[in-house]
Image (cartoon, rainbow, N blue to C red; front, top):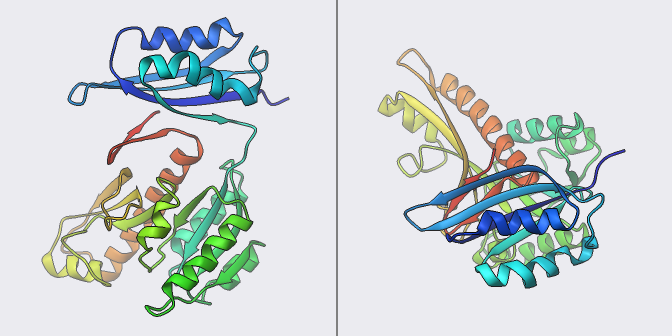
Length: 286
């Protein structure tokens, strides 16, 4: 039988007694701590913490844990916290355009059962990848966006997401810029992938530009989307070395491999509740 667990992510001004307060809350109420990790940012003087504990015999009803913690501890220590339970499976929507490499990687991991997540739908601005969605038995919705109909089409997207109960969104090489209004409805809940050439190599063909410059390292970055383009909190990054022997097609292939891995790692951190966002940076718990 699967055990029943809770996970809490916390940040607050650093001060004595924080760890003792959180662990006391768990222990005196019959919980058993499974994982605990903490960090203090000395520059900001901010304390960060992630605790996962078994609530099988917890004295406080599950639906009251957050309220109780807020009243008895968070208010006293000026804590901001998020609480999650392992019996809830988050729902993830995938947005795509025409490139399939990230989508295939996501769906392969999904069908292999690597992630505790549901994918109720895929949204695209093109028909090209419908056959992929059909192969995996997932709804595929084409919503074509132009400058003239952007607000109307985003309203359709948001209606679909609400209907399916979507918790977060992954932009798997979705070649559209989301409006500020859309992004604000999903704060730190939209994960994007891009090549790490930005802002040096912007535009439709970054690998071509990198080739022309003779770069020695290429990379990829997964991050949360904010209203400032490609400037949101970074979740994961990776690089690989290249040389003058590599052709443009080599760069594209190596770059796409990185994009798949970095995006999947970012998704996994998010699903497993190991990312804590503070201002415009992330704390990643192991």
